[in-house]
Amino acid sequence: NLDDEDIYELLVIIHPQARGQGYAKSATMEYMKRVLRKHPDLKKFRLEIAESNSASKTVAKKLEFDFIRHKNEIDEEKMEYWEKDVR
Image (cartoon, rainbow, N blue to C red; front, side, top):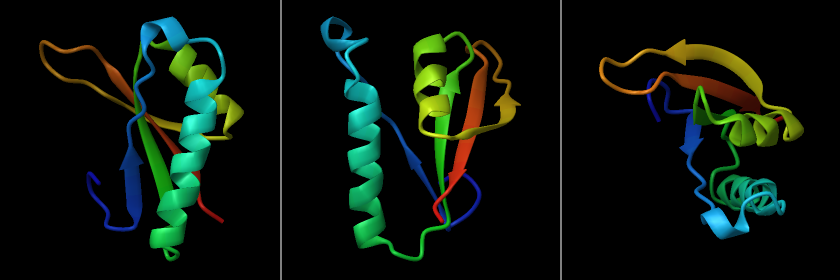
């Protein structure tokens, strides 16, 4: 969580040989379900995605996450935040 206790931030990394087969979407959905069982009052999920990572942005869109903002870091790749309301 970056700035709000009611937002759960998650990270999914798929092995290069398994990419493009739907694992990221399935893993993210399952993880979200598990988190909600443990934290039923959760309000939002957040994804932090590298600006150049078009595959992850596609997964975010398929899971109905909304683009929120860019995060600019010195000497690092630009990142994007995507969020989804739980309810």
